[in-house]
Image (cartoon, rainbow, N blue to C red):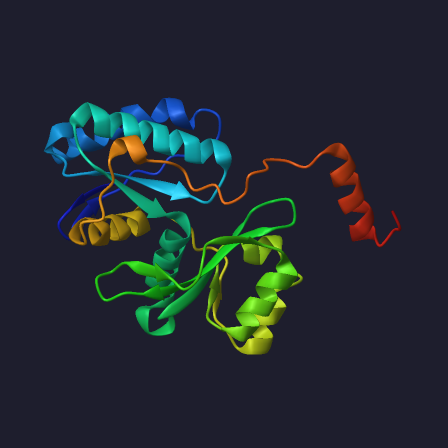
Length: 229
């Protein structure tokens, strides 16, 4: 996306193996559409995570390369904050002064954090962005209720939607950390002076393990079937 004052130009690409190859041509096309060169930009933002490891590395590396090439600072934007911003746009500001952003982290876990909407259009995490078990997240949401948004509602359909219904919480399983949401965060970050030296840009992985071993997958499958180890 390209942010210019209150306006934003956005291009969305499908993920997958070809995404990185298509990204730079799309950046060039977006700049051409706006009539700008890379050096005309004030800063380069990127979604730092959490999320899929490959996607985070790709986003960070490409944004870093663009920023170094243009001699511009970077803006590190939280994926879960972008998810909250998207949900706010969809559900309305009155319904979302605080939000639980919850993304499927695979392996039966959830990336989640509780977010508070700020007057400048940004979001402040109310606690650390963390990797949760469904039970632990349910306990945290019960203690500090707020609307639940993100695809973890689908991945943990037996836990999160019933919990939201019991607590009377709004939900939005279709909210995503999209370009418009990232544009809102970038605008707020730039106004706050929250820039980053490209040499210091890193993804926010949260999890340090990419996949389960075969034994772990088999144990999880047995547990899901209620079988003894």
